[in-house]
Length: 218
Image (cartoon, one colour):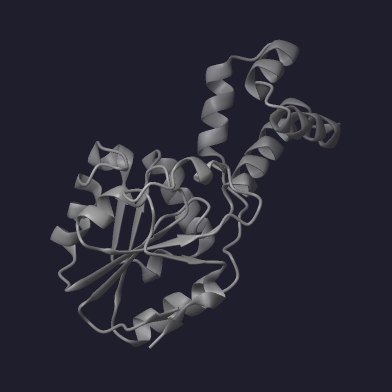
C-alpha cells in the first residue's frame, strides 16, 4: 500500500493491537502481579493466571480470593506496572519514513492516561509523536468524533490517515470526517477479535493490511 507523504500529511495510529499486541501487556501485568504475591513460585502462579484468562475466568477474583488481596490493588498494579512490550516489526521503519518526508504522526487511543503513556514510553516512540490523544484525557472514547477533531485542531493538514484494528469503533469517526482509514488484520493475538460482526459500511476501513511491511511511504 503506497502512502504519499509530505508536510501536509497527518498519519494517526491507534495503540493497542496496532503498534504492538495488547495481549503482551496483559501477560506483562500478570507476571508483575504473580511476582508480587508469590515471589518464590511466581512462574506457576503466572501460568495459572494466564490459563484462567484464556478460559474466561475472572483472574483478579481468583488471585484476590486465594491471597486475600483487594481486587482494587490488583487492578491498580495491572494498570500502573512498567510494561514489557515490543513494537510490531516494521513500525519504526514506517515512522522513520514518514518523518523523512516531513509528515506528522499522532496517536488516538482509548484508555487511562498513565497506562497508555507508559506503553508509549516503553515502546520508544514518544520522540516521533506530534500529538497524543487519550480518551481519559479528552473525556470521550472512540467512536466519538471529538477525539479525531482534536487531532485536526492540533495538526494542520490536507490528508489524514487513521491506522487501527478494531472495526467496532475505530473507523466510524475518521470515515465520517473524510479521513483515509486502514485496518491492520488480526494476527491471531488481538484482545478484540469480533470484527466479523462489524462489516457494515460505516465500520469498514477503506483498506486492510497484513502488517507494517505492507506500507510503502513515498
